[in-house]
Length: 178
Image 1 (spheres, rainbow, N blue to C red):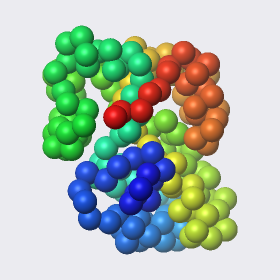
Image 2 (image 1 turned 90 degrees about the vertical axis):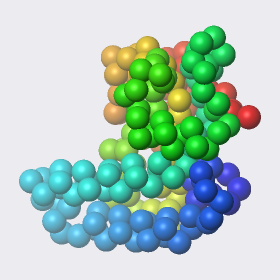
Image 3 (image 1 turned 60 degrees about the horizontal axis):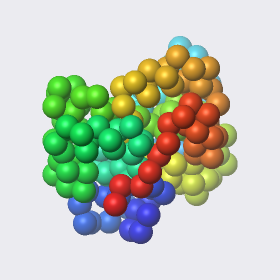
């Protein structure tokens, strides 16, 4: 995406996110490469902290892809404007609000997979490349249930390429929000 450190997400605000993204990459590099990250008792807490940072950062962007079923839900009843940045800010705050049902935000590549890949990165630039795959897509609750019940909830979607393949296998067709 133009002016975005994330491949498939657009910043909600017009200001550049590059400096904040760089700081987050440095933080994640330090945390995933400290000796405490290898301790299973501590690792879980560190991963939760990284997940929270990535979750908050991700909410500064709007998704650019939606499943065909979710799109049809928008056309056939749910009155939301997918192009409106303010709507996403409200949605992030009130994700459980029935007004958005049956729509659901999903990390196409699970955060746990992204964090594990960061552990294997040898530099901050490699972390940037890995984190650039951070992406929410909009799917239906039914499609989320399909992913949850499949063998691909966490495993098999470690990269954007693999995740897109799994979505196709699960008959979740993504389209660009224009």
